[in-house]
Image (cartoon, rainbow, N blue to C red; front, side):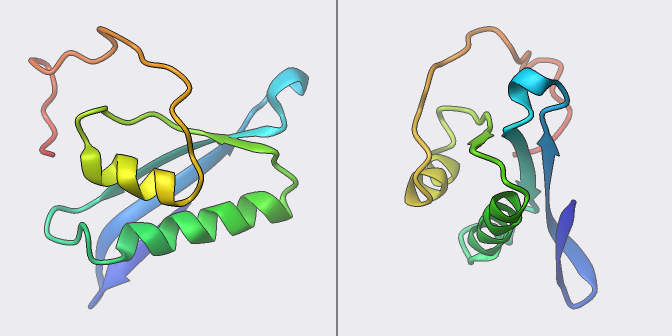
Length: 102
């Protein structure tokens, strides 16, 4: 896990979990979040760059992640790093039960 701090306050975090089975041990699964107010200022870009460098050193061949298709800022960020949409999932998140803020 990597965190980003501004004046001692954590404003972002990312984690990359390596596939745990032989058949997916070459894949890293990326998750990240950036605190509202610190988006679109370079925090996420720096974090993704750092995580991708770590993944390369670890010998990972592919990084997988999910995001909402409506999250245009995240989609743009990931495209900048060469990510491509491989598919879409429906009904995997219940927004009524979501207590986090976006």
